[in-house]
Structures are given as structure tokens and as C-alpha cells.
Image (cartoon, rainbow, N blue to C red; front, side, top):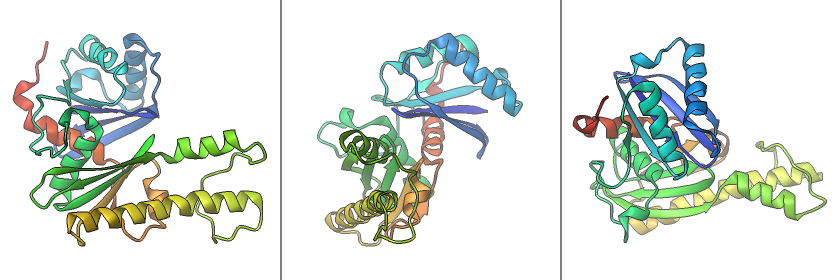
Length: 261
């Protein structure tokens, strides 16, 4: 079995693959203060609850956009699993040319998503990832990573609204029945929800236009992808585990470099 770990600013997402099957996954809050031992015990509790053991894992692959946590997780992998994790970054084979001015600037999660989309859905493609930031990535017909756009994520955008507007309450993010709200809560929900729906459709259409690929497949992922994409006109597929699949694919392309203790 392969353990895949995606370390994001908001969530840490884990998955276990057995062959070509994602047999289980977890999404937990990212905490930069956790030690290797705390993470090891947390992983053990998760494994125990689902009936798995550490010795069933024969390889670990990880992507991270939280640099302080990367070495701590690597220590945890060595200490508790006895495995050296493959960490997605420079020098790791992805099978995808990066057409960015400085390829090292591209977040590992964006590359992992692009690799997954290219193999699972084909090219050309646009990936929309609803994370701490909402990212839009373009993949060419030849399977090249072209770049994309980054916007403030839904969570931090709505939190800024609550903090800066004293009379506006925190509201549940939900799809309202209409855009014209009849009270403050309904008006906020309409503005937040349809504002982000419109953002997705506008950016995706502009990306397709610049690519010259009006029929490019559009795949969305991330915690809020399903909710937001119910209202969009441009998203073709919602794949909540896209990043985990990308990590598995990259592991397979680098299997000979995985070191075990």
C-alpha cells in the first residue's frame, strides 16, 4: 500500500492506495505547531480507526506548500513508518514540462493536480482547486503546464468580510435559492456564493480563450469544489481526490528512487 500526503495551508489530506484503488482518505486541519511524535500518534489513531497498520505501508509520497511542516512530516515518516518519503519538488520526475518563467515558483500541489488531470481526463485542460487560495491552472494539448491564476480563497475572503464589516454576521456558506436576498444573511450568501461562481466561470472562459482551446476539459477539486461547482457553467468534473491521485501517479514515475530503511 502507498500512503499519500498533501500538506496544504488549511488542510492536511491523507490517502491510502492499494493498487489502483483509493481505499481510504482523511482530511484534517493543518497545525504548524505539531511535532513529529504528535503527528505519528495522530496518524496511528486514524489508521487504527480504519483497521490499518503502519507496516502495511511500503512507500510514502508527499507534496507540501507549508515549508515548516515538511521536515517534521519527513521525520515522522522515518520514525514511525520506517520509510523515506518522496517529496514532490525540484528533481522529482513528473512527466510534465513546466512552461513557467521560474518552475521552482510553482506550488507542488498545482503540479500534482495537473499531472492527475492530464492522465485521468486528458488534455488540454483547466484545473480549479478550491484551497486556502483558489488556483486555476492551464495544461496544453501537448501535456505542458502553462501557468494560471491565483485568487484569494473562499475562506479567507469571507473571513475578511466578517472582520472588516462590523454589522455583518458570519453566515453559513450555502447555495441560496435566489440572487436577490430579502434579508442580510440571504444577501450575504447570495453575494458570496454567486460571486465565486461568477469568478470561476469568468476566469475559466478567459483561460480557454488565451489557450485557444474552447473545448478544454475543466476539472475542479478541493474542499468546496462540489458546492461551488453546482452553480457553475464551465466545470465538467468535480474530483475531490484529484491531488491524491496525482501523488500516486508521481510515485509510480519515481518508484525506483524511494528509499526504505
